[in-house]
Length: 336
Image (tube, rainbow, N blue to C red; front, side):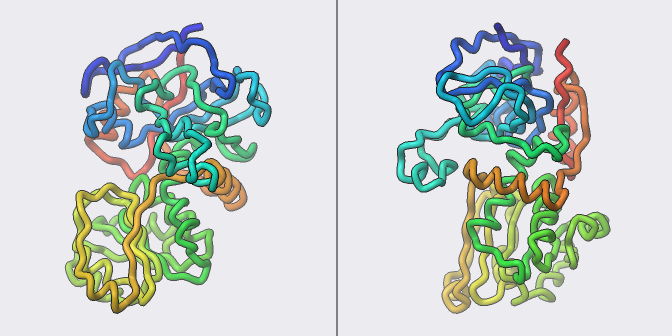
């Protein structure tokens, strides 16, 4: 049976209805009925071929929430009808050192859901069963999709950096990634400071979990919080005054990037003397995704979303491209 989807035939081309034959289901694969699919800035980048990775026609979409409707003969950990989610990764080799140590997201042979394969702006999508992550029953299916990309992007650094509940932490940028990071870190038990160039976001940032707010539009604002943070998560993709942000860290502090900033620079001496470090990370392993979902279920964490029909995909892409809303757009499957 053919899969119905929305695809672009050229960079930045209009997404139109597109049917394709996925072929025989692999023995270790599952087919997911897409109920909802989040819209991410990475979808925009792949749609426009910003990274030189796109193959056309391209079906974007990698924040899937749905149900297993078919599975290969080797899949025994998932059942037909089970609620699952799918994020950026659809496969990994499962044989390399990274996979065998549980760090599947670092596999050099990993396969992305929308690189060289068709994604979730469709009625169905396929993946290796390892990356189809069971969704706890009390999480809202219409909101959970963005957790599989944006959510795990900001949750994974908390885990791999051993952030403690007693730490003082900061989040730079209160947008699609940052608003989820505030929730995770607040519920983690940390004292949280939000950094934003938009002072009007202070109230919402504090509702999401921030204890303090720094308006970085004020050129002296960073000086007031120097030497106060154990961990600083940067979610924006802009060039910043890195020396000042590093100066906000206490001795032993870590600056961690998940936003694709064009470059990061620092004098080395302050890093050495303060035993400070700069790091970055991509998404997370299946096990960490599952932990994030369980944590979200326990603490009732969910992204702020705007629900739109999948048939309005082009309007949704335009909103994301031109307005960069702080909420996440989620598309509801409305194929007949």
